[in-house]
Length: 103
Image 1: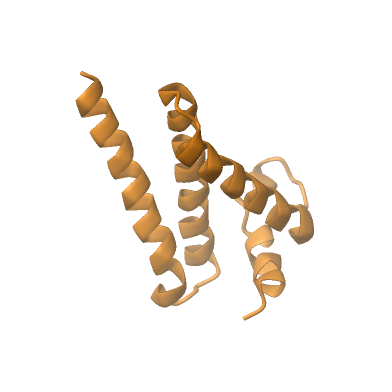
Image 2: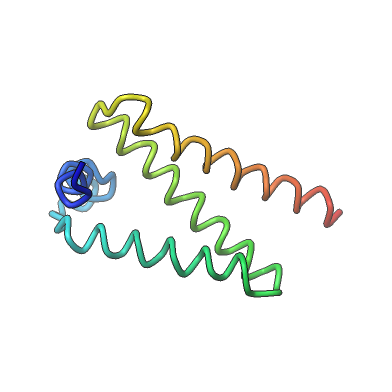
């Protein structure tokens, strides 16, 4: 499937669009999500500071929750939302492990 066509559907169900009565262009929605994923992923791999890693983790977790919500709202099959669910649990698990180790 073409990612550009899919993001047209996802931009329509973006939760803050209805709250603030905004129309988000799917092109910019796709770009911002992609850029945030790349930056946060690189930060989690290469930045040695835990505060930055945790901020990146929380940002990615929020993006994955948004992805799961978007897939649900457009009635995508489970095969499409499965990877977002897996990454949601992995990122959540990383935060739980970090919290337990830091105590």
